[in-house]
Image 1 (cartoon, rainbow over the protein chains, first blue to last red):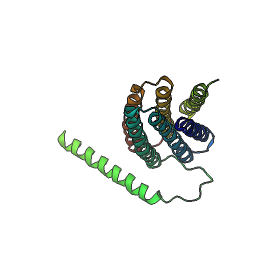
Image 2 (image 1 turned 30 degrees about the vertical axis):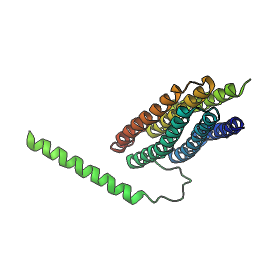
Image 3 (image 1 turned 135 degrees about the vertical axis):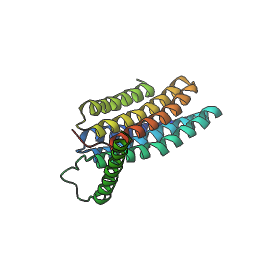
Image 4 (image 1 turned 90 degrees about the horizontal axis):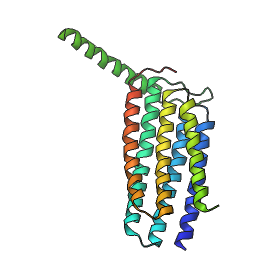
Length: 132
Length: 87
């Protein structure tokens, strides 16, 4: 019974993986791609891991079940953080939004960050000039 | 065709779409996000291998892969942040 539930959950997870990968190819700009792919593929992989966990419970394999829980927790924590970091880096380095985008709330803050980076770089160059 | 063959074909198809985006992607962040997604897919691949073979060391590979892929992606993201955009 647990095995059957595990296979059903893995099947749903694989469907989510397909949706995420298709979104990665079809959507128009980096921000759309990032949100589609990251959410769908994270959920899909977590469901595969959950299926492995249920299967291991059914097969009475405790070591595998614990590892599956750990693996799912790591994926669930790290994948959205990584996608957020990439999108922030993309915006600050100036990748343009899709022309159909409606709201851009990060504009001012990104400009502040860029100014700060430029100031730090200027200070570093000044120190180097003094040193030489 | 067994359940596992279908699962492996689906995961390989998704990896192929990610590879398309890595090769084609117009900007560097596109490629970076595709690499991140590919890492997450490989974790799913390792889990399916663990189920198929019944060997639990594949789960160790999955855990290590998830963590190392995260560190690599963060390093790439910090690198992108300090660098002006060029196509």
